[in-house]
Length: 487
Image (cartoon, rainbow, N blue to C red; front, side, top):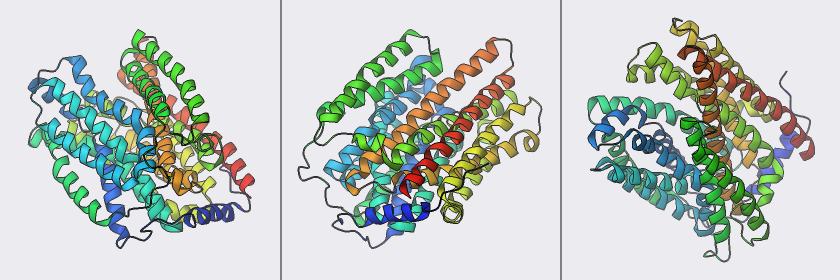
């Protein structure tokens, strides 16, 4: 039974939003065209999300064109993931210290230039290096996008903006899968990168004109927690790398174990540095106290549950059912449509039923949708075997994730909005990486034990459903406790 919000929840969240919006004003708190600000911010996150998956269907052509080995081919995918996931915390704090507008513009400019270089790559090393640069640009721009929403949109407008943001970001992976197949079939693999160039130029030019330029949040803007940046980036990068190697080689592979050991050594060092830093890369109060701290475990578990869905469903549609890459991508569109529709309605539903109830109901929908895939067979009809779990999953994601973002960031001060956004996105990205590696392990165990590809996919997605159910239960405990404390 979904938990309802205790009395006082709405007033507590409204009060925290009021504190945020009445904090130190920016130099330009009301931009002349907020709709264009939102369009630029969501457009950049759409490009970042697309590039996480757009390479998948173009990879065979890339391999032949630039003479990639199978190992190097995997790094065309992983280099972007590693750079983006490993540098989000640093990117968020750089926006706080040096200015979010500057960080955003620098990030999207670097992403656009790297896309041009990737599309023109004559050699394998060039292509992989360009993918790393894309990830760095994304990590610099990504946290600033959410921080700009926090400082641009007050009150209820912020919840609506975050709903748009979450809907667009969630659809980027599916859109990338479809776009990669279409561009490769109709033009060339190079266009999966080159298409970013005119879009990036347009978004940069528009951003220069419409983005607000908030006053910096620190009196000493040049000061940065260097020790925290080094240890935090090493810990995050080592952990992301461990997840990538676990997904391809298993958790007991030497490279996976070495990376996990490196993360285990550098993470405590990072926390020790942050306790003493005058301007920490990640203020520990954000990670351990308040609404953001209560939301992060739920966000990580839901991200872990859903991150591998496209990977497994894409394999099922292409390798079991024999659909083309483009057709497979199009068959996943109903899940994207359901997610988008639910995300757009989430602010209204949150005001009507309360954020905790909506988050818990959405997480339950995610668990039920993933559980529905356990019934998958090799000859099921699309409507009977795939459509209803996909729609249920999309609705659950669309209800829970935007509401979690709003809940988590409601009481964050403007000075910490970049760091908080980086922490939130890091939890999503690294939770998803762990989930994908874990479900690939479940899949491999099932198929090596004599199971078919279909049974392996069904078992893996069933395990992901259990993870979502745990996230649902945790939401009941943590978020209800938080709203009682706030009341």
